[in-house]
Length: 224
Image 1 (cartoon, rainbow, N blue to C red):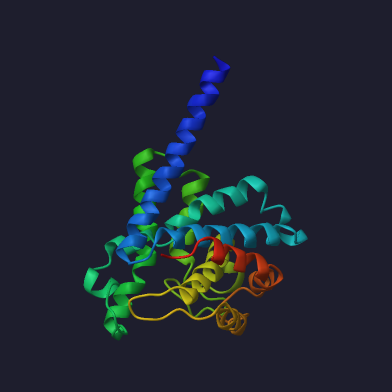
Image 2: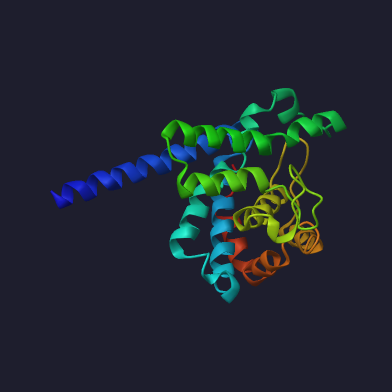
């Protein structure tokens, strides 16, 4: 009986993980990204979170189980892009100011989608709570000039601060309808330039400490 229960729990966990991946992929594939963006950003977040957990001020929060939930939540960071019209989401050139304002709504829409999912299940739980934080706040800036709420510094949830670096790094390294990829060295320089303005300085320092491991992730999950 115990073996049967453990087997069923394992099956449920794999089904949950697959469902999360599919939900994230829906948004990414609409944005003409590959599933490798999801894999890479998950690994970036995993590396950053474990490195941050080594700092005494974050050790109590970033337990192994909490980091696992952050990593599992990462594929849902852009789920709100499902609600963005194709003519804006897939536009090959720069967005107009009005189009950019529409694009920015994906953060709040992702938060709303995940909130409704929690209400349907009758319980948000810690996983969906983290996923909502990431979806809503990964475009906030350390200096308070981000969106949608203009949060600054530690008012930005830590999981979203981790995702901010992971998401921008992968965007810089990836080809998009409106841009060509940049080299890893150039992407690193841009991340460093954003230290203390766009990004949490501690998260940038963690990235720099693990730079070679990030390069390995990029090489492992190459876009086709």
